[in-house]
Image (cartoon, rainbow, N blue to C red; front, top):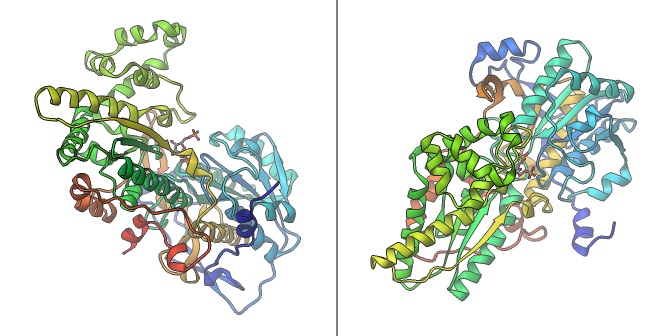
Length: 545
Ligand code: FBP
């Protein structure tokens, strides 16, 4: 593989490890834990993996002997910067423990375990991928690992390769499934351990034990760089409003972090829209009002950040989507010809939902009916909310013009930033964090743990002071209704309106709306002074302050 000069220099970067993982390591165990909710139900469902203690890795004077072992690793779900460094950290720690240890990578996600597709990871392969973005070393996939037949099929290859533990790198759903798998193998006394690792650019896998999911830092910094560039362009030409949709399937953490970094004129936060029971028209009026006020000052330009998941947080749209989900799942739906679909849907929807559906621009209405993902979710990344909002703002401004309430100009440009950030070369934060997560995972396995997630805490301090360890996955679970059934799941972390990051944003948004307070954060820096290269996200700083 040919490499750029930056890639070559970056490959030599040695990620910083917490003191507890540097030399000889010993394990410190805390007290028994409880799940965050529904303790009785979770305990019943996970009798073998419930109640285990939190663990921490601390430096030790004693050199331990480690028996040889083989580990399998899986990347699950959307790409997130730093995934390769989790693998590298795990690999290096394994080899440090015993040179005979082996690491197998299952290919293209959890499906690789079920279908017995794997490669052995070697020094040469690992060295090729150090500090790189992407998941291309072994690939990723969205196959859900949740059926016994899959667990048993996985066991066959686990036995064949003499694997002691499987490490699953994924988001809340994948880690919930990792815990179900750990419980299943423990209940059957198969002697196979399962360890999870917190990944997702969306930043919604976090709680008292997990400070952040990896990839959020780099993805946000990448988007903030381009948003900053767009803002500078907007401020130079002074003729466009830029509507920028940002990834985040559900939670608005990415949009909020980018707003904190760039100070745009508008940032919509889905969780606030839901909390205030806002309609699509409320959101459009809010944006149009800011456009009009800026126009009154002669500023016919600006930026609007829109979280990808917004549509599902508008209460009326949520109801429409729920009815569409049921309708599209019927056999009758499959038989309707594409050209007839709109009329058929309008004839079947309840009156309220039909009225909303009919009011949407046809393109967006069509996007709402597109194929669901394997978890049954609307694929929000395919819905052009940025165009929907700008078109509706334009219509409102025309009406205001007629009433003499707006006499400026409105021309919109549209952007969607998501995929461009998911495989960026990890920032120092993500490179270090991921490497430490991988090393922690190896330690959890060596210490016989199963049903744990690797964690690293205190990450706003210098890396040497970070605290590595593990959290029992059951500790983060509660029961939630999913597709009509109560299921044990890791609680998803949405933006909290009483949280420090949102409060900081809310305290400034009126000023940022009318005045031009753009910040241009510039590109991620990999080499240079620590205060430039080693900063974490503003979200993390504010939350941990
Ligand atoms: P994960 O939760 O699996 O990390 O993926 C998150 C995400 O990047 C969302 O932000 C986005 O909506 C979705 O993946 C896109 O999925 P896909 O890659 O399948 O198009």
